[in-house]
Amino acid sequence: MTVNRAKSAAFSAALEAGKFIRDRLGNIKQIDYKSAFNIVTDVDRASEKMILEILKSEFPDDSYLAEEGGGHEAKKTNRRWYVDPLDGTTNFTHSYPFFCVSIGMEEAGQMIVGVVYNPIADELFYAERGQGAFLNDEPIHVSSIGELSHSLLATGFPPDTGVGKPHNNMVPFTSLTNLSHGVRRDGSAALDLCFVACGRLEGFWELKLAPWDIAAGSLIVEEAGGKVSDLCNGPLDMPTGHILATNRLIHDEMVGEMKKLDLK
Image: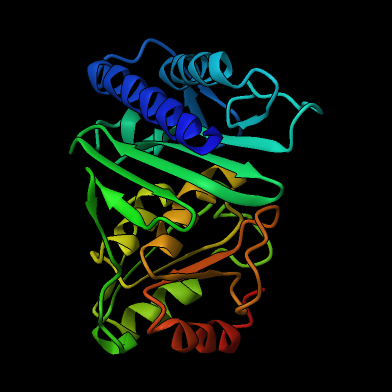
């Protein structure tokens, strides 16, 4: 079946790239800047090349959207792959151990397969639509905490935080820190989403993320029983990159806070 082949290919690509990334930690040969604060390394590029070679060997006619530009549009199938070869590049550059490989496959506009691999902890998160979510082959579920005041949250900041408009996320960061057990900012949206899926966090929100940041993780959250939307509880719109993911139980409360802050 196509889905089983896709999942197997994504596993192989994520694990091989993850091992490569782990082996290169502390051994970066080149750092470039895509913008003032948005960096890319030779490891990102090599990881992406590795992933795309594996995926394209199985699915040569599919479309690919990859962070470092290695993707292409195709018209022979209605499948699209979203590839983040190293989500958390800044962390990786500083040897801060919170980064991952993220691979998602969409068919006919619906996410079907999501795979996220944390090479430092050797944690492979994955989901297939309608089949649940897993961590290293064990089923995972969102937490049962039902109040924002008892929740642990996470967020992130785009590279243009200092100058970006509208909103640089500092106001909601402060507000929700005061309304919860705290807000973590660890620098990898894909892993944050997986942490919501397995119950380590109750909620995650961020603005202006790229599709490859959230494609795989959003499916994993949903298949773990959580809810994913835009900031106002509408459908997730990956082109805008505004996302709210929760354990479902605190979703309405989080949406209410987002609306108070006029986040759109």
